[in-house]
Length: 114
Length: 112
Image (cartoon, rainbow over all chains, first blue to last red; front, side):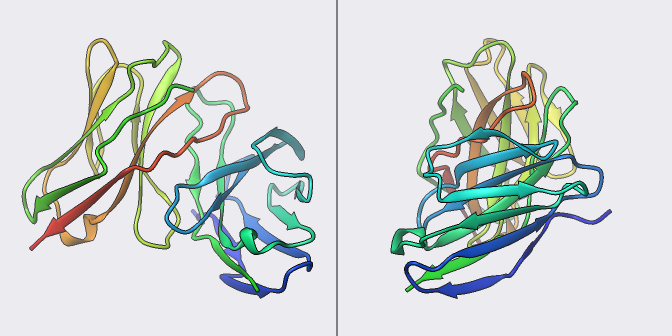
């Protein structure tokens, strides 16, 4: 069974640029959630995708957007990058339909905005 | 989702049991207690979860009080590799839309 994978591992961008981060769900999972973790803080929920549609969103501006594909993989897109977007971006997959939808996390993508 | 309160940090000697407390006094009937841990700069790792009954798996045991207002995560024989930030999270099990709300967690340091 393959776990959650994310790419790339590290990324450096400059302010104003756009970035796309990718996530492959754990086998058999149908839901993907994205989190942002700033240095020294706990992860903060960005949004969740279920059946290829956004299914809940945290307190993040519209320049944070996402996609979920038929194979349940997902992308996180961030436009007009700001210095404060520098963080570890985490993807978590789960199987909706069970009483408790345990989320399993990938290793994360470290984004640095200069 | 109910909020949780955890100590900022704890120490434990290698080989001894680590008991990590969590208060969730406003938990409601359909909310689960989840525990995750995060080793520096890695993704959070799922440990265990429970609703009402005590739970045990290969990693840990979860003890939930009868009134469900608090719980304790027990690592029976802590090793140096268990040094991490441990997060106690209360999650609503209803529907397909749910998120994990992470607090600051407890930094557990296992000492040789």
